Length: 501
Image 1: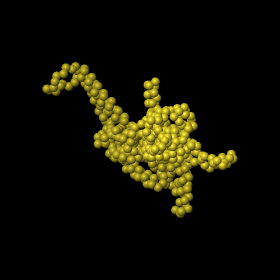
Image 2 (image 1 turned 45 degrees about the horizontal axis):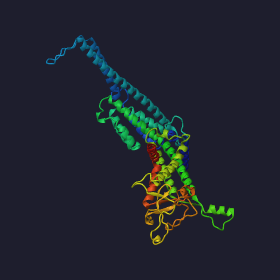
Image 3 (image 1 turned 135 degrees about the vertical axis):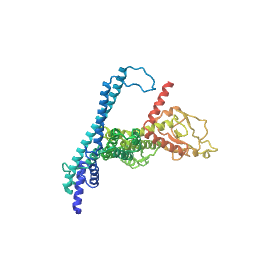
Image 4 (image 1 turned 90 degrees about the horizontal axis):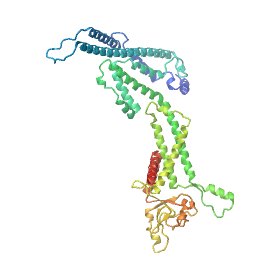
């Protein structure tokens, strides 16, 4: 085949796959070889009704057992009295009528059981014959495909030719024609394939129901083993057919989730966008506007970092749920397009940012404390000053707030070596550029000043060490990742508050 012909065939086939899907395209390549292998396996099975056919022998054996059970029942009903007890046996007083009724009941139970087995075997034989008819139809479609030229078979599928989906039908039909030994080998192969394809979790859920292949020896065991093998093959075929669509749906949801996570992250950054202080020589309105626009910068405050970490944690958690949605057969239905699916995904990163913010406020408020939690303090001024800079002077000393609206004035000074000042929460005109500079803010020891919103916005986040900053961001990520962490915590706090009230 020339290169131009191969290119044309490839183009037609790609267009056909996009229009009808891979499984409805005509067989080619390794699909033809596997179809031929299945054909060989089918042709080597003995024809039904011949002496070598185990299905015919099993059906005849079941029918013979029914006849024997019916004859035994008839003999029990015609019996006048039971046989005499064996010599030396314990004498049991029983009437002839009772003995006869017992024998009849036993014979009836045996007849009912043999009839059930015969009915099941008859149904299995009928299933085998139907499977043979399906396979013969598939072989005719394959013969028609062989008559079609390569160029025509690579375009839109011609009617009544073998397609890729016919391989799955061939496998299922052939399974219903295998006898006990061949079915055991197929069951072992299906179990191994099921574990490799579906994963250890799904395999562990089904292994408890697996039959013991070593105990499968009787003809009636064939039906139970056939049911197990058919179920495994059905799950594997569904996974094989739905995987492309499932992966496409996961990719779509992942892109939507990534877009909303990025959007929420940008919204958080914009919320902390700040403009530099205007110059004194700028008097015009347009000059001030231009200066405000060109001096915009992101103020990377603790709150900003916390909300970004919560947004990222929520996005990672939702991504894991999307990727884990393919473990079972109904996963494709669970990930199908819904009217509001994009809205539910959009809320995830937003809730993560809010949860992280609430958790960090609980840390700062002293509600949660411990070795595994960050030590956070909110202060109206600088987070600390060095003792050396104020030795022998009357310079003011910053001290820690010990309660809402109260600044304690008897605590010792806090060294800068133990306190790290990240930055302001908001940009203010009295922004301190050094932690070694005495505080000059609007906050005083007057409790009324704490009610001033402007003074509250000038508070700073103070940390005992760099490890506290790392713990703060880690817990912010966890708050977004674990969607039930903050709601459960708030529920417990509300319950304790109700008990105290």
